[in-house]
Amino acid sequence: MAKEIKTIGVLTSGGDAPGMNAAIRAVVRTAIARGLKVKGIKKGYQGLLNEEIVDMEAKDVSDIIQRGGTILGTARCLEFKEAEGQKKGAEICRKHGIDGIVVIGGDGSYRGAQALSRLGINTIGLPGTIDLDIACTEYTIGFDTAVNTAMEAIDKVRDTSTSHERCSIIEVMGRGAGYIALWCGIANGAEDILLPEKYDYDEQKLVNNIIEKRKHGKKHHIIVNAEGIGHSASMAKRIEAATGIETRATILGHMQRGGSPTAKDRVYASTMGALAVDLLCEGKTNRVVGYRHGEFMDFDINEALAMQKDVSPYMWEVCNSLSHNYRK
Ligand code: ADP
Ligand code: F6P
Image (cartoon, rainbow, N blue to C red; front, side, top):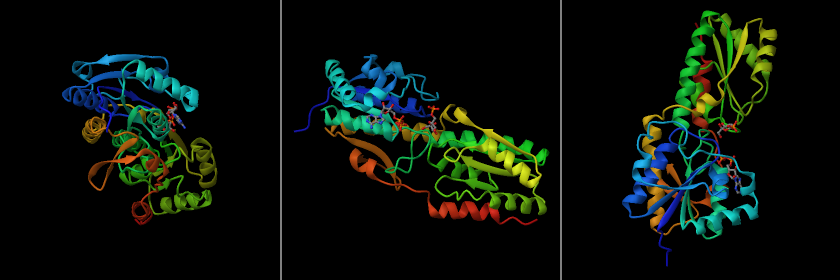
C-alpha cells in the first residue's frame, strides 16, 4: 500500500533558474490545498544537511511568481554525493516529519533525489535548469527566460557590431549542451553558430565564411558560441588576425540566469509544481516530471537519467540554411 504523505519538503538545487519561484509557489499552495504541511529546505542539499528547514504557509509564497532566482536559495553540496551525507539527509527528513520531497534542479540534483528515494523518502524531481539538458523532457524551468535574455543581449551587441562593421563572438551558457546557442542562433539570425554537439573546430571555415559574407556586403558577423566550446576571447584574436576585421568577444555569463521569468516559465513551472504534489499524494516516488509532445508527464528517475538527448537535426539544418544562404 502507498505510504500516506502528511508533510512534504521542497528544495532548489544546482544552478538557479527563472521560474523556480513559480514552481515553489505551486508546490506550497497545492500541498496546502491537499491538506498537507510544507517545509521549505533552504540552500539545496547543503541546507538539508545543516537543517535549514522552515515551515511554509500559502502567504510565504506571495509576490514571488514574477521574481527570478529562488527564494529558498540554492547550493552545490559535495557531501551529498557521498553515501554518509545522503543517509544523514534522509534521517534529517524523518526527524522533521518530511515523508515526501520535491527537488527542483538539474540531473545532478536528480541523483540526490534518487538517493533519498532509495532511503525511504518519497521523492519527485522537477527539471530546473536553463541548459535544457535533461533528456526526458523537451522543456526545463528557466530555459525560455534565459534564451529570451540572451536573445535581447545579442540584438544589442549586433547594433554596435553593425555600426563598427565588426565581427562579434557572443558566448552563451549551457554547460556541455548547445541548446541556448542553437535557439539564439536562430532567434538572432546569427551568421555562425557553434554548438559543442556539432562544431568540428575548423576555424578556417569560420574565417572563410566571414570574408565571404563581408564581400557580399554584410556589415556585421555574429558568431554565437556555446560555453561548452568557450575560449571566445582567444578565438576573437585569431579571427581578427586571419580576416583583418575587428573582432570582439562578449561573454554573457550569469545575466542569463536572472530576471523575471517569461509567461511560459511561470505557467509550465506552476503546472509541474502542482503535478509533483499530486504524484506524491498518489504515493509515487523516484519520479521526475517532464514535458513531451504537448503533455506534462512523469518518468522513473533511473530511466530518465539513462536517456540520451541530442540537438534536433532538423533545427540544426534550418539554423545552417538560414545563416549561410546569404547573397546581396
Ligand atoms: P544540477 O542539478 O543543475 O545538474 P549539479 O550537477 O551541480 O547541478 O548538482 C547539484 C547538486 O546535486 C550537487 O551539488 C550535489 O549536492 C547533488 N548531486 C550531484 N550529483 C550527485 C550524485 N551523484 N549523488 C548525489 N547527489 C548529487
Ligand atoms: O547549469 C546552469 C549553468 O548556468 C550552466 O549553464 C553553467 O555552465 C553553470 O551553471 C555555471 O555555474 P556557476 O553558477 O557555478 O558558475
